[in-house]
Amino acid sequence: MFRQRPDADLIVQGWVIGVMVEVPGERAPVRHYFAVGKADRAQAEWTATDLAQTEGAIASSPVDGHEPVEAMHEIVAYRMRDLGLKSGEARRLGDKYPRRWLF
Image 1 (cartoon, helix red, strand yellow):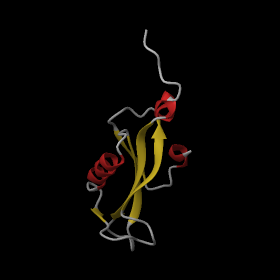
Image 2 (image 1 turned 90 degrees about the horizontal axis):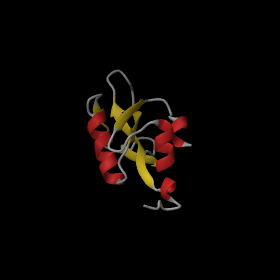
Image 3 (image 1 turned 180 degrees about the vertical axis):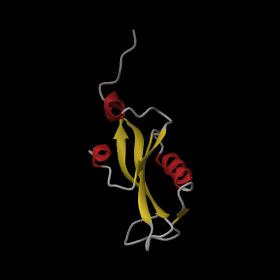
Image 4 (image 1 turned 30 degrees about the vertical axis):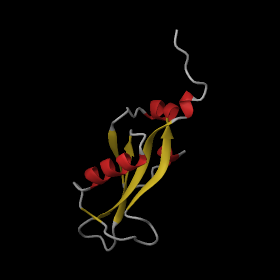
């Protein structure tokens, strides 16, 4: 019989990433949010960047003190199950602040 680690539900399995996208008609880039089911932060940021490119050009420099691509919060294993995010899956969360995903 296999034993599960006591802290297995607290291991980081994904990230919420914010990407600044230059949307036509807007004065400044707009931050779009993505939930990415990859434990590696850099891979999650690249995946979110790839998804964001379909919505517009990504900002080339910081805007109002925010980086163009920024990991907002980590998602632990039990929270991924609660939110229905599978490992390796990437989901668009839109441009509204995703409170449900961050806490």
